[in-house]
Figure 1 (cartoon, rainbow, N blue to C red):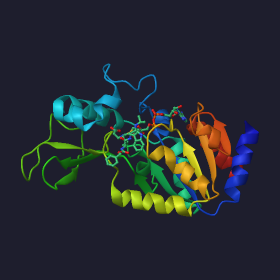
Figure 2: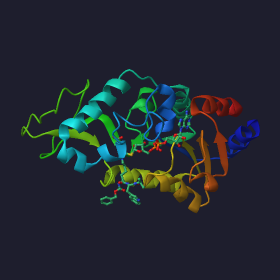
Figure 3: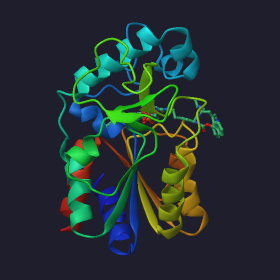
Figure 4: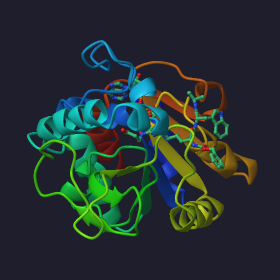
Length: 242
Ligand code: BV8
């Protein structure tokens, strides 16, 4: 394992513009359930079914119960050493951006500043009718109502079948074009378009470092695959860079 860490460290030492792509796995050690992990299900509902506009249209109360449950859970979670290392690397100037699929807000809580939340944020809400947007400071109580037009508010996250925010995607593609290395931490690399981000870096000659407790569809394309929990392996990689 140490030789994988050293290989990754060697790549990072030669990197001019490092970006990170993270998924639910980086928050696992903060006790945030992953989407497909053993506790990824919720009351026997499949997140892939609940995180859709159809589910919200059919049963907004149930979908809000799921998000309220997650807000309550994540409100008690803290960033773990994996988040802290990425924040430290940003302060040291060589990690430029964290592109995250996570909606838990833990990268910002770890003081990462340049964070692109491509799937939105669990605390953000937007009106289903007008342009009203806001942030909840505590878990929702029932279905929140728009103060402007009294329609239902919905979680301001990207559901399956919804396109990602264009402004954020413009920034993402700029970062990927600039990157000569992407470190991919804790994602099953199944969800598009995020799963293709590392391949964009590779296509123009950049390197891919993957960190995961399992192999994924990305592993075959990675220059280095570091196998292990990110809360342990990112600090190890950080030490190797000292
Ligand atoms: C879109 C927000 C198109 C909600 C989420 C091709 C192109 C474009 C779209 C598609 C396409 N093919 C299919 C699609 C449709 C779909 C899709 O990708 N489907 C999949 C099932 C194939 N994509 C979409 O719908 C996207 N929209 O592209 O629209 C479009 C275009 C124009 C006009 C209209 C539409 C939108 C996708 C976003 C969905 N929203 N979240 C919410 O969170 O409530 S996705 C959801 O899954 C989370 O954000 C989560 O982060 C994300 C991805 O999962 P992972 O993060 O990877 O988490 P997962 O549990 O899967 O894996 C965890 C990993 O961590 C595992 O590998 C595990 O081994 C590892 N791990 C565990 N512990 C640790 C660890 N690693 C390290 N350390 C540990 N300790």
